[in-house]
Length: 587
Image (tube, rainbow, N blue to C red):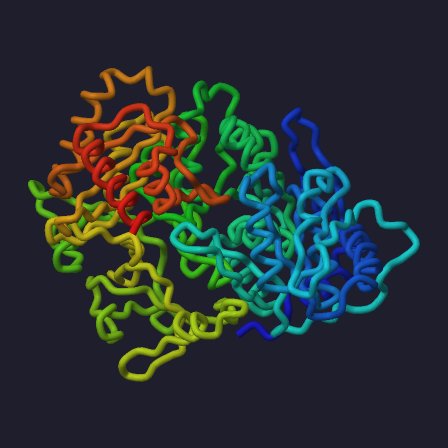
């Protein structure tokens, strides 16, 4: 167990690193970059903010941080850590149209009294000043980059290892966002865990487009490089989606050694980047892939597209984690080829058993997300919480010093999620809600409990249906699969596929829908499959890019999803769904 706080570790190293330069570049759309900072300058900037902050808040209070990626956010976060304040990173309105509603909920949850931001962003937060907290006072918006220069905090960090450092709100891809209480000890342990998996050092250089308010961005490529001492370049998530090539250009420009992204980010780059001229990815030694299922097809697509410009598949670092465990739970060691295996799809779907597949049978291809330490990670049977044998699917449970304290203000859910015990009394464990199995000492993730669809007596993961569609339609940029239960209680599957440049495909959309249905049914035997093609950017996503299936389902049923085409099965399902929605609304 890590016995120090992250901020104490960082502060202790200042004496050795006061003259070392760590550069955090913030790339803007017009190509301009931010400044260079030594560790001592970071310290001075944080102390300057803390000098003013200590007059606004008492230790233990919650402070909302709404910044674009850059130095001001880092200094505000460190200032909160110095003063034992709980930081809540949130998206700005330009990144998430639901940012206002999100902050309303956070204020209700935490009784936060003010938001820290920078002067350039403060005008866009004008409506936030109308938010009234439980105490009756309006939320105050404060720009930290225009604080007067006179005040500074001169003491040592007040935070202890067990103080909550960050309230990390989950992305809410399957439920309403929940505030995860991440302590100083959690962060220190997880940064050390990441460093151990990818052997990072001050000699590395990272490139990221993941927002700082997402656990992957905050821990993986902000606090990890800050705690390790290597430089990083950032671009905004909006700019990445608009021009994915820019991400690869930054890696080329800085001769980057590390990057991190959910699977869809790599897939988007492989599909959307046209010419690879001028790119050089030969220095990249660790490409972390997590936050959503890692697809073998994406790994192969990246190899095909970018091996000619130096991308080495040995750089892949498939990993598994979540905000409830600070970030990383398991990861494949860097510079080691990930394990990719094919399993009997039918036995996995009907029996939950991972068996080798025969050459003529449908296969499910899974990527290992790293070695499994049986003292930290176990597979528990969902029905009775007994340990599952090797190769048998169950819920992934974890316990280590990175597991967070729980959910703020929800003792019941905290007890259920963070204090689980096996049938033989081992625990407490974090119940991840994810399904998987252990095989030959490695962890394989098969899906999420909430995303399992029961179609024709088979347990089919939404991820697998979506993956089959993406295999069939190379110019698809996302998919969402969900089930609809009709008045006869029978479940039918609907698959929405988001298309990039829909008119450039080799066949019309009617024929393409038939091809998708045949391809998916060839793997999963779903019967009548509703196939919907949506415009590029139409599928609702979390701030980290995960598709919100439940919201996509609602938008499609209510006609709010921009649809390019839907097959007859989908049209019939939507008509029945609309009738049921209308009936329930009037009853």
